[in-house]
Every structure is written in C-alpha cells, then in structure tokens.
Image (tube, rainbow, N blue to C red; front, side, top):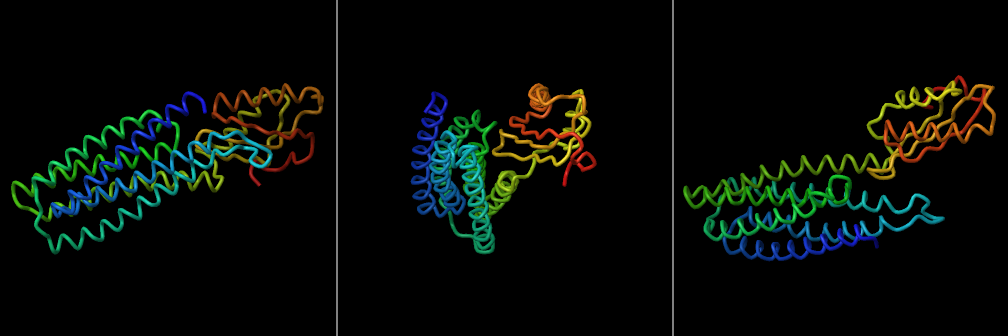
Amino acid sequence: MDHHNDATGKKFFFVTILNALITIMEFVGGLVSGSLSLLSDAVHNLQDTISIVISYIAHVIGNKKSNSNKTFGYKRAEILAAFINSSVLIAITILLVIESVKRISQPSEINGSLMMIVAIIGLVANGVSMWILLKDSKNNLNIKATMLHMLSDTVSSVGVVLAAIFVQVFNWYWVDPLITIIVALWIMRESYGVVKETVNILMEAGPDIDLEDVKQTIMEVPGIINVHHGHLWMIDENTIIFDAHINVAGTRKVIDTEDLYDEVGKLLKERFNISHVTLQCECKLGIEEPMIK
C-alpha cells in the first residue's frame, strides 16, 4: 500500500472510531431524553460507521492491480460501495420521515437540556469527521459518499441543537420531529445525486462529453476523414474510456498509424480528459457509417 493509501486508511480508521463513540452516546442520550431527532442522528451515525468500514474495504480492493481476469483492475469496487452506502442512507431517511410524521401528531415530552448537550458533542465530532474526509472526497465517489454521510450528520446535529433550543425555551416538542423531516429530505436529495452518478457508471454510461465534439476533434488530425462506431464510457469517476473506428486517407501507410493513434490520444486527453483510447484504422470500410450505431 502506498503512502497516500496508508494515509487514507488512517483517516478511515480515526473517523470510524469517532463515529462509533458518537453513535453509542446519541443512542443513550436519545433514549433517556426522549428525543426522536437524537435517535435519528444515532441511527445515521450507526449506518455511517458501517459505511466507513465498507468504504475502506472497497478503497483497498479498488487499489489492487489489474490481472488477466480483471483487466481494468478493481476500480469499480469503490463505485459499488458508494452506491450501496447512498442507497441505504436514502432508505433510512424515508423510515425517519414516516416516524417523524407520527410524532408530529402525537408529540412526547423531551429532556431539552440533555438533548442539547449530546447534540453539541455530536455536532463537533461529526464536523471533525467531515473535515478529515473533505479533501479526498473531491476526486473519489466512494470517499464522497462517506463524506456525505458525515455532512448529513453534521447538518442533522445542527438541526437537533435548534430543536433542543425550541424545546427548552418554548416547550415546542413538535419541532423535534419537524427538524428530523427537513434534514431527512435534504439528505435524500444529496444522496440521490451520488446514486444517480454511480448507476450511470455501473451502466457504462458516458460522461458529460458530446461525442460529436470528440469526432470533430479527432478529424482535426491530418489524414483522418471519418470516425464511426464510437463508444465512450467510464470505469470509475476518474477513468474515461473511448474506442472507435477511423477512416484514413489512402495516402497514409500502416506504419504511420502509431503516430496517428498517439496524436489522437494526446488530443482527447488534453480536451476531454479521456485516459484510455482504442482505435481501429480503416480505409473505406464503414466510411458512411455514423458515429453512434
């Protein structure tokens, strides 16, 4: 394991231990105080702790080298982990919304002081966890999904603190489940974005790149007169694959194709960040065929 992966592993370990402690504290605090928002926050943290372990295992698997059976390596292990974690988070928030709706019609008494103390400790701990993972989440969907769990719990903790204030000052117990609903809806919205992106990758959908632009870029190379049967897809969020058939002018010789392929590869990497290009060189075969077929 290289230095970066070792550092990432330490971050995962620290965040896992921190969230396990928060989960225990909030479960006890929620049961003693009677706060649904504290219990919902504890459920989030429990799922987060599990998701961090899943994310780290996927991170280790994803960095394994390619072999004859997995020629593109194990990069999609992290995509699968991101999909699972975000999907589970959506399911949990739906259950919390259902329970919160029931609580609004039948509010129960809550110990606002205990609720406030536990919520503030949870807020600080969740904020630290989110900050630790923030940098690595920018270029990795798996870590982003985990960081999103941390962010959701940070926002949820803010909501619990606000609910505790209303409970203490005004005895508005109905604010507790209302805050839970608001936070849950926000979490569902954010998680849906990760689920959508991971599903697109698993379905081998292309990134947000216009294939016609790719075609016109390739045809800027002297000697290429048509591009057809093009395919564009992603192995993970950072690895874009492209393959196509190209028609070349009759004046180009087979020996020239290596330079041709190299020039096309550099252009596509520079303009579209396409990292893996496979081209099949032809003269007249398929010259009338479209880019997508």
